[in-house]
Image (cartoon, rainbow, N blue to C red; front, side, top):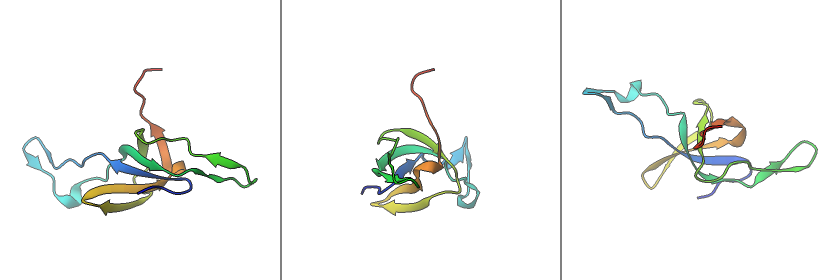
Length: 96
């Protein structure tokens, strides 16, 4: 699978099923807001017609808004497809 235009496909971090010995029911779990980029589109043209490439790459760890995007499943794995502009931050490996 591959993303198109300025879209990003992310595998969300795994949901927490229990805390200690307490199981969390499905309806009480929060949607994850962190994940790993699996696929990115090439980019899109801005209002002036200039092509703007995507700034993310597969393997990037990102944070995103929990209300944006489309959740879907493929071959038993969960994915989220969002617009690049809905990525709010990227996790850094090194300290700046």
